[in-house]
Image (cartoon, helix red, strand yellow):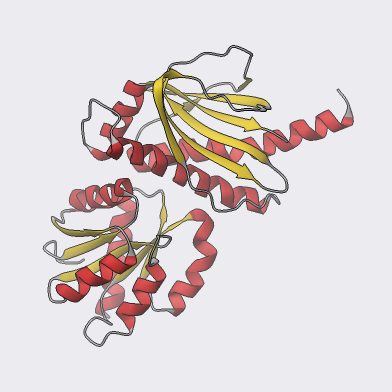
Length: 165
Length: 131
């Protein structure tokens, strides 16, 4: 591995960690749901997972250009939403979608603070919510993606960071 | 602690965050709420029911009119200037809190938060405004 690759790996790890911590803290504090981080891995070609709803933030800063997505299977997110707000829903309607956006807002807010201390300057970003049946997160000119799975009592979901620079 | 019959105005552009705040307040024992999605609508609600709302819990960043603008309106209104006012803020906005303190905010809560944190903040705020 060359020096440039090692430096890149270091930037990626430093960038990733606050988002992982943010996911764990937001879920535990805001919904009382215990979230266990699983081993991260580089997204392989053809990676398939059952995604029903995803909160997505695109970033374009001097140090990082890419996308952060928190991706949930439909039923896992419906169960998390019920645990967080005490409301049962059977479909991913607008209220539930708002929940996915707010979770990502909080995760991003947590991560942004830590990253600022590490020298990463990130702008305020507005999350969008994507819906679909077993969709894949895929972007034109997709760069390297890192997947961090999380295990809960309701099932697993994952954080995906797509690095485009 | 605030009387549990206190009517609380919860202001946030995100529906989910309003629900989170209200759920936590219900767990503490409150049951009387008014909601608004931004500072401008919150100001209308306050202006129309001055005698009923006893506490404001407002997000900072909102479209149309921010939580800080709402706070400044409240603090410059003779009938409302003593209204207990708590700001909700993201971790990354804590540096802005100085501006809110100068504008007269009574307390602030960093998101995410637990019901216990909210309860403690409400107790601290009550002590402050009752002193």
